[in-house]
Length: 234
Image (tube, rainbow, N blue to C red; front, side, top):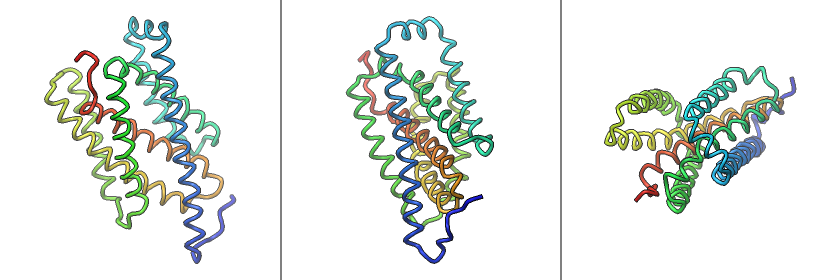
């Protein structure tokens, strides 16, 4: 197996290597978000798609299951897949997410969606920079945040049936805090993996890193939209 040379005595070379890998991660993440945005815009402009989802509510549940399948499949079998397969699944995931997200353009005004996007981008960028440059070990953050994330999704499922608006606001606030923390933690984790990963696994690492940060951004955006989104019905 080919490995990068040992840079233990050359911090500058190691920094260059890590920086190159992180650039691939962020670029792939950007492309994934672009694919999602284009898919959502296509859905909004295609009456047949709108009609299909309006008359077949089960389709959204199929997309949810498909999304979960891709995420768990990538996470569990990434070592058995080629880099090209991982990348393909990532972009399929981005398309599926675009199909799921297009209804927000009917629920919220375009101006408020744009405003929330820029707020999300600023928050995400600040926390990702913190995660990249901090010398603090965020491992303990990760343990706590993963447990909190599981609790969050349990609360989301409960509120699907309870439909309590106050509880929804509380969940949204907690969700914002969790994904702000996850952004920093995931960034540091990806950086650490980039410093140690063998050459032939860099492509997979870039894809999995992009997927992690993509999920952090999208979920942070959706929870912030609960606070900053202006309803089209107002």
